[in-house]
Image (cartoon, rainbow, N blue to C red; front, top):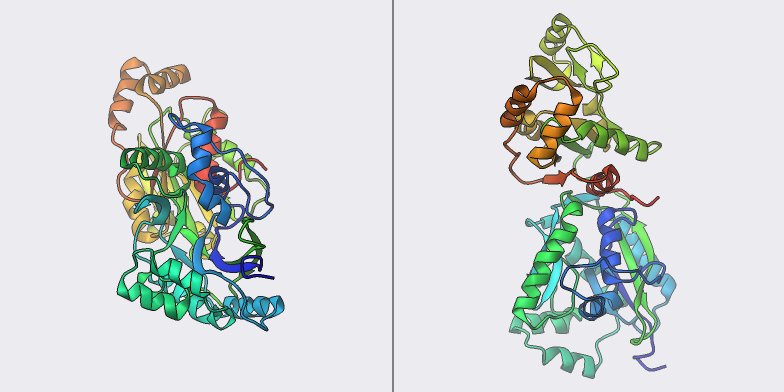
Length: 424
């Protein structure tokens, strides 16, 4: 068997298989790298299916991933069992962590998902993988080495190539999950970057959980890579009591926040990692209002003074709060979804940095029609209410849903932002 016919292996980072980002990225590349199934890519205005297939041909062959240990042949005498054992020992020595959210970037002529902020933990993970698996790697052939050396490398990259079999390691490492092959036309590349940023925006708001490592295999150079195995990290999180995510749903009256949350609650029934916070309000319950716990003004003030609330605020002559119990849910690593006022966003971020804001909105004329249909206020009151809620939340971690179409569409987008499947 020649080297070209021998299998190659790679140690990659792969997103959780049930994450909305993983599912969308695999669709974009047109292949499920775990099952091998062909997938229909999403349509993009101005881009034909044929052209999309062309620009994704190379990353489709490798499968969606971020490189930790680049593809290599096993050294003479090294068995697949030894590689599996090495993978297990590597994972056992790693700690789960959370990386910053991803963004669509250009890396030279390529487009990829890259980290939106530096992540020393990811750099350390990649460096550790390079060193850990290198004893199992067959040396590069003379042809492989010559081909690499002729590709415009810097002196330091040449040194790294000779030592580790790949030039983009250690201080040259840059985390990326490739979305395209090289696109030579700068205008075409910029257009696609803009369109991909829009396509992926709904699933890029969240931080990236890094809690496992994956082994990919390529049978021959003529076949694509397949994800063979995922191995979870075994050690405890670096920070005891790893925090969950707080998702604050905000937006103007009439945007449909309650309908969106109710539909998401039904869609996620039976998934205990998602918790929908029940608000406390100084208003009696009624069929026309949200399902909430009612408190008198005196009881509300007493609980507030006792520190029983996670967050609290006043709006429209009423007092609102989230119960203090959601702190336990967050400490347990759960995702807590809550309908709040935008006025408490900064307060929430200070208390729990892992906070995502989902702003639900709709065009002004749609909001006005919905509020008038409620019959609670006259036209003047509705206009005053809309004027007070015109400002939109700012800062990082803000995701906007324009809820002016079918509710199912908005719900699917919301579930994607939460990082869960919508087709189950």
